[in-house]
Length: 187
Image (cartoon, rainbow, N blue to C red; front, side, top):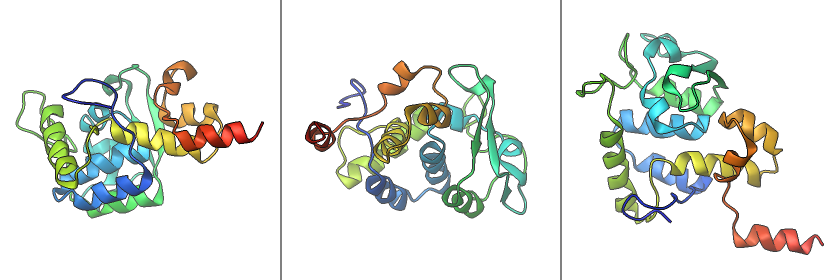
């Protein structure tokens, strides 16, 4: 459990994700949160997106069918393509993006919304909902765990999440007592 920025963030369930998404009042924070869930991506990569990478026509709020997450914004330095699901398309169409530049502009020196500003905003929502041990990485851990619980092959999950190795991917999959009990029952 994550406490005072130490430890591993709790993984959000799909129901918890929906609950938090509904509680996020700020449209910018809501879209960042949704993008993190539906792409299984790290928050800093999402914060570094440019309008031109997400929308084919920003004025018409028309997103691409595939998001290209450039190597320059990803931890592993590898460009990744991510299909836009119907639920993510709906979130992207509901957002009013700037016409050009950063998708989430901020006042910081980087030009985009800072990780710290997003972290603090999300922490307030988690606290308001009484969710303890959750952080900005709870979306990534949660979406990956949901895919594993749905029975998807780990190689498919690796492709979807952009992990270079299965060993690194394994750290994101949360195994609960019920899953362990079901596994033992198979023996």
